[in-house]
Length: 599
Image 1 (cartoon, one colour):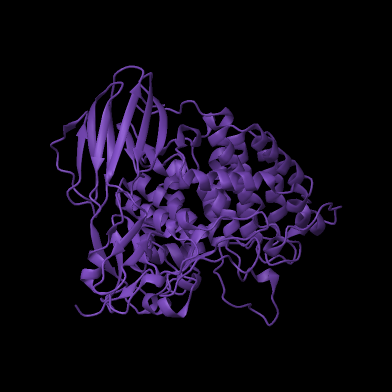
Image 2 (cartoon, one colour):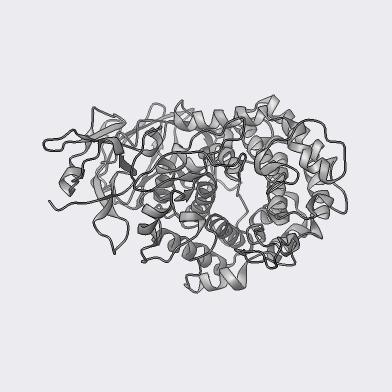
């Protein structure tokens, strides 16, 4: 480890040796590094609640039920009962979330050191390994061989890295042998309809082979096996996707949104692993094209497809669909890509985008239930509501536990100069630097309050920089150190740097004014707007809306009392309009956007 780089500290068990999810050793860059799952502890609150709910649910799932599709398809005895929904033997996507849940459990173990979690991971590996045949019968007449193999790769390498599972890498090699003859020869495009009259499972119609390079790059790094590096390069989606994106050509419209956002992480991983500037350009340009067609919430992809930026497609979606954003899957892909790009570029704009998605989509997801009810879509319709997907155990039941685990590794980053604070949320970071143990505790009610307090505890004075993300909207931000106002100007859209010798009991206080602004749905409809306060979209509750809403009405919205989660705007001769942020909405109907009336 280079001198001055922050080290892992007090991480449970094998998490100490593998502190990150995407920590591919850079070929040509000095990218920011991630802290380990066990180095960040979340204080009680919505993020920790989501973490605990998903951890508890995965621990409760029957291993026999999880293994039934694998056992039955391989002609083995299969005790237990079906899980249901998309997951079962002859259902839409048999066994498809097995690897994701293994991955999430490994991350939960890295964060908690819970022995029962480690033991379940090892049983899941042993149970799956016993189903593997050389011919890979499991994949016969399976719509998603690449998708399922991709998730198994990640689950097995995470199990080894974060839970020290001794059989994980050997099982990965056997899993690869079994899947190999069922994978396409290269990344194949997603088709919207079968290529022949019947559903032809052999043509990879709906499969997502164009996403799998990222986890293969990780497998190559973690196992040292060159086979996975060659596979990662083989499945790079170059000619149809990365090449035109690298040239600035927007080829996103019409494509399946979540999987092609996910594919951009493979491009970022290719840059880190291979030093390929083309793939970095593709990832950056692809993200920019997504940003151009995003809602004020940060979400994108109505009806799971990218649209043409500048068209009326987003506006039309406010009345034509309730499937506005594929929330757990889309958020997981969004967090991964913005982590990569923030690490590579140190551009805080990617943190701003991550924050939007956190507070306006995923943190408001209804919880996954033991019977497989899963929150799939955030609804931005003029008459929006929260609802579960019609089918049990859809794909978002795989990504919700993963992103709930990953909040920890999205909050803080590090390089040789110091600590980068990306997300402002109640939490404690533990690290070491220059043989000093460091604890950094955030106390805040942000984004409902503008004040953020960061308290240091260090075992000896030590010099390093603290970098604080100043959001692009945060004009007039200020900070103080130990009660003394810092004189530097905090430019929006930058990381403010505080470099000093830090001592025990040092305190930094950051104030980010929560300015209100109106963001139109698109340039063609400037009077259809969302009310945004800081990073929060304030959504008017349908039961309190009146016929006339003006700009003045929206700008009069204020918290009902200090740090309240309920906002209200006075309306002449009428009851006030009430507003809530997405995480605070329950069964109420709401609107993300409103159409303004003349003043």
